[in-house]
Amino acid sequence: MRGSKVLVCALAFAACGDDGGDGSGAGNNGQVSDELEGYCIATFTGEHDILNLGGDVALHAEEGQRYLLTGLPDSPALVYQHQDGAFDLELDVEAAPIDAPCLAEGAALDSEYVAFARIEVYSDQALQNLVCTIEKFTRGSPTMGFGYGYVADNVYEVFLGGGFCDGLASGYVKATRITIGDMGHVGVPVLQLFRLQE
Image (tube, rainbow, N blue to C red; front, side, top):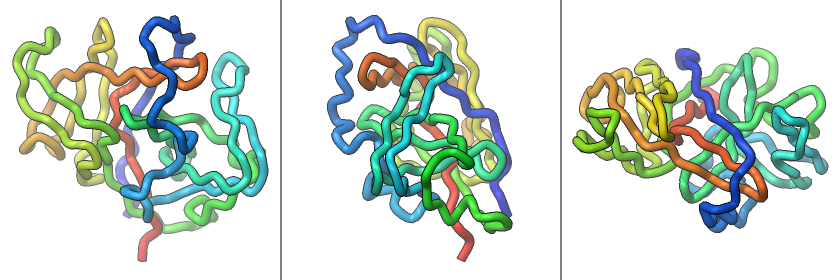
């Protein structure tokens, strides 16, 4: 059974260049880490540029590079994995030269939510009262649902669906900022990942 679809978004903006972000720790160009092998992956069979909303190159993928997939089956996106979290990039499956068994018509998939960084969850928007911490690579049930909405000052309200933090329904987190090249990406680093049913 496929996991329930839920809106998971990320803001992309031109980086100001004063946060010291240089993409360090992303030396593998955002490809899947060993800890997350086994989930749905797209392997590039040739070079390909993925553009952002402004028409600039967000990611230059080379032949043989492998990226996690999210948004299946209706809105496939690549997951760019970074030491500080992750963000997703819309994937044009008709144009991209990829090998991705999970994108085959009729593929039966399972899913779960995965935290891509250590996340501190607070009960208040001011981030004063720490409720719990979600450790990196913690998995959550696909039936729980997960969503979030921007509040202000890079603070998000997260809707945990009871799948993390001992059944907590919602809380507040500080968004992760990841700078790759001259682009900054902000988002709560929890994404829905998929795998082929056995």
